Image 1 (cartoon, helix red, strand yellow):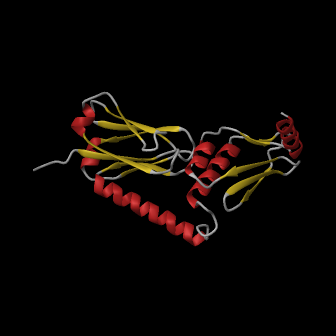
Image 2: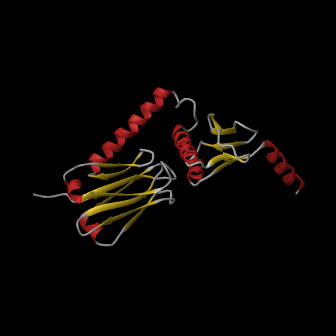
Image 3: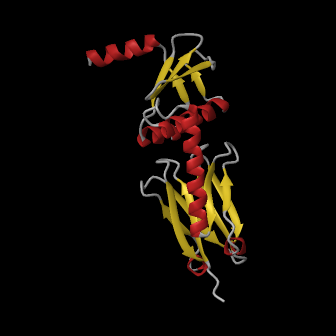
Length: 216
């Protein structure tokens, strides 16, 4: 009887938003202390290890909250055919998968179809220029706000969020402070994921800055 010891690890890149797939056998994974798998965009990576007890661990960045999470699974569970799905503990986003290649890819395909159907039902797909980037950007803004790091220079944290087709308009409910964030490309998503704070600036300061630029 032949036993397939190959495992496939897939994670959703925290920068470009695409899934990355890597397949290796238990014997390959045991050959060295750790394996580093880099996304095609070259901006993120997952670190995979297997210890002496055949526990496979994956350290991966999270597109949901911007933090790094560690997930572990016994290799015997992979050999038995289970697909292990790991969620961000902060946002509940499914972003890391470990299992047999065929079953794992079918699981991810099903997940993406369900997300596409939800987007269609909500009617977002015909409005936003890039729906996935828009929703991921909005999630990141909410994450920053929950940590108290979305605020206006006047000190107010009561911020209105207005969704436009290609950008998000943040407006202070107390003064004229504002901030506009583009949300149409993977570069836009990369920029917002890298942020830990968002500061709204008043129109007065914007005007003063423009005058300085014109006079320089």
